[in-house]
Image (cartoon, rainbow, N blue to C red; front, side, top):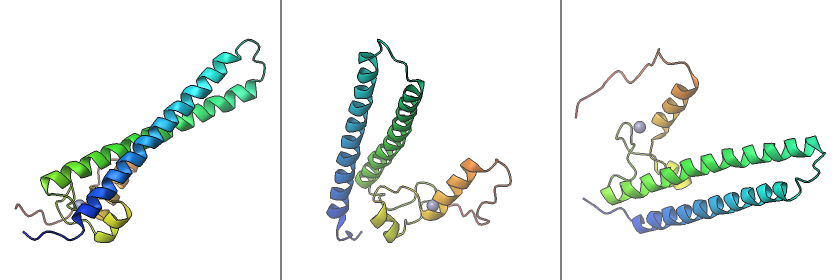
Length: 139
Ligand SMILES: [Zn+2]
């Protein structure tokens, strides 16, 4: 087995991403708690319904953002685990290599572009009519 040059670089990038996401989550949770406290603080005579509605909207928005950040966090953890197992850069779905430029853009990608696309289509489209690869060679 040959060691890919720049492996430690990738590892460092994953670590960076992990810390960045963790920091974003912390900020988001703090900001959300802040607005919650703010709301409670002036509950004495809240009259502006529109303002309340927009706050609820913001709250929902940050929840959605938080959820997507947590998904990214999971992906990073998974990529780090794959790194330790020596399967980093291989697709979780088909076991094929993930394109270098894809890993360059998203160091925590765990699916190749084909499987990623398939997964997204599967989620949005109705099940059935799944045209998988015709050759399913048993390794
Ligand atoms: Zn794949």
